[in-house]
Amino acid sequence: MAVTGIVSALIVGLIVGVLGRLVIPGRQPIGIVATLLAGILAALLGTYVAKQFGVADTSGFDWIELAIQVGFAALAVLLLSFAFSNQIRTTRTRRR
Image (cartoon, rainbow, N blue to C red; front, side, top):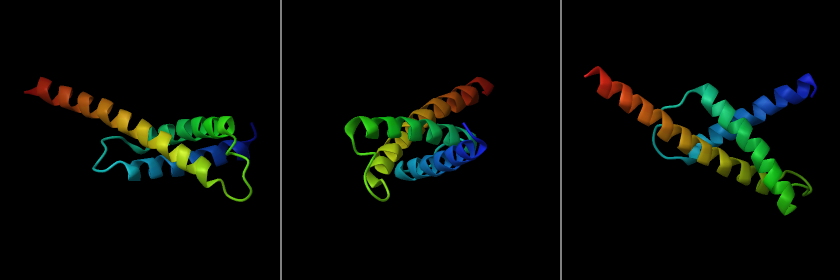
């Protein structure tokens, strides 16, 4: 993969991750790195699923593919939020 491909994957992953965070209501206890990783994973998985359903090759901007990617990002952010909130809650109860 070329450097431009890596940079574009990071940018798309960050955008998809942030959009996924916006879909989930409330405050999520995850950082920007977790958001970036969730977005990159969601972008790759969303592209794969969109290709399997045949909606990734539309003319113009692929809104359906983006919606699938954001859905996967929202799911990943939700799962990471639960994991991090349980970790924070466990750490706080041990200090008392």
